[in-house]
Length: 505
Image 1: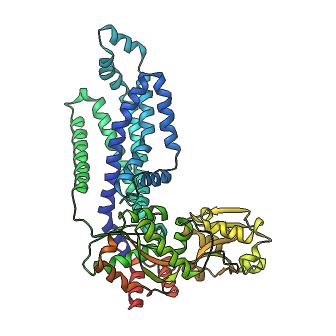
Image 2 (image 1 turned 45 degrees about the horizontal axis):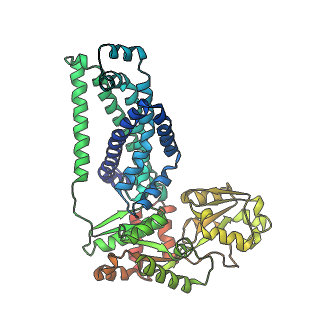
Image 3 (image 1 turned 90 degrees about the vertical axis):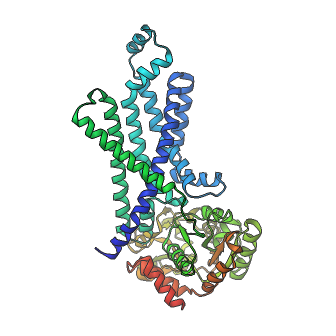
C-alpha cells in the first residue's frame, strides 16, 4: 500500500462520519418539514401552488450561493449549522412534490368509500391516503437522500467536515487518489442510504408477511443499519476536546501548504488545532472577525480591493499599512505580520503563442484582446483587479472563461485559451514555460501574504510569539518551490511543509 493511499484511508473515518452526520441530520429535518408541508398543500388548492412554487424556486438557487448566504445570515458562523440548513432547503422539493402527488393520486372512489363507513377527514388521511401514498412519498425521500449525499460534499466550502474534504483538497493539490477515495465513498454512502430507505418501504408494504424468513432478514438488516448510523451520528455529536484555535484556508495549493505549516508549528508548541480549508475570501474574513476562524493567511491586495473597495494602487508599503489599520479598526482582526512573499495576480501566455502575436506586456493586448480567449480563476473576472486592468488598459477579451485554478496552466500550455490569470508564486509558470506579461501601468495590486488573527487569538501572547517565527521568513522563491513540489512534482502537502520548515531554519 502506498503512503498516499495509507494517508487517505487514515482520514476516511473522520470524513465519512462528518458526511454521514450532515446527511442524516439534514434528511431527517427535511422529512420532518417537507411531509407535513406536502400534506398541507394537498389539502388546499390555494396553498398547493405557492408551496410548490417556493420549493421549486429554492431548488434553482445555486448550492454554493445558498451555503454562502447561510454563513452571512448566521453572522459569519461556519461549520455544521449553515451546511445543514442549506442541505435541508435542497432536499425539500422532491419530498414535498411527491407527497402532494401521492396524496392526490389516491382514487376518489376509495376516499368516498372511507367516508361512507363513517371515517372523518383526519382518519381518511392517516389510515387511507397516507398509507396508499407511501410508495410515492418514499420515492421522493430516496431521491432527496441521493441529492443530499452529493450536495453535502460542498459543505467543505463553509468549514463543515465531509467527504468533500477529499475532493476539494485532491483537486487543488492534484491528488487524484484523494478525489477518487472521496468520490467512491460518497457514491457508496448514497447507494447504502437508498437501499436502507428502500428496505423501510419494503417492510411497510409487506407487513402482512411479518412471519416470513425474508421479512425477518430485511427487518434485522434495516434495524442494524439504522442503529449503526444513529450511533455514528450520536458519537460525532458528543462533546469533544475543544481545539485551542482554528486555522482556516482558501481553496488552492498555496493555502493548503501554509495552513499545514502554521498548524504544525502550533502543534509542536502544544496547541490543539483544528483546520477548516477550502473557504472563500468573504466567508473566511467574516468568520475570522467573529472568531469562528482564528488564524489564516490573507493577501494585502485582496483586502484592499475586495473588502475595503479601494480602486487605486498607492504602492506595496502603503497598501499593507492601510490594510493593517483597516482590519484592526473595522473588524477587530489583527495582523501577525507579513510572511515575506507576494503572490501577485499576473497575466500569462503560452510562450510560443505570445511570440507569435508579439506580446510581452498587457499593453500589447490592447489592439488584439477582442479576438482572444482569456481564462481566469473562479473569482477573477468579478474582482476589482480585473476591472482595474480592463479600465486602465481599455481592453476586454472576446471570450472570458472561468476555470478551477488547477486547470488554468494546462489550458494555456495546450493553447485552449490565449491568456490566463496566473499566480506569481505558482511553480507551474516555469514548468509549463509560460510568459508572464509585464504590467507597465501597475493596474494589478501588491499581494503580500499576511497572517491574520481573530480578536480572541490576538490576545494570546504565546500564540503570537510562535507565529512571529514565520514573519518575513518565506521568500517568493521559497513559496514557488513549495507550490511546485505539490503542483508539478506530484508531492504531498506534507512534503512541501517539510521543505519550507528546512528552508526557514
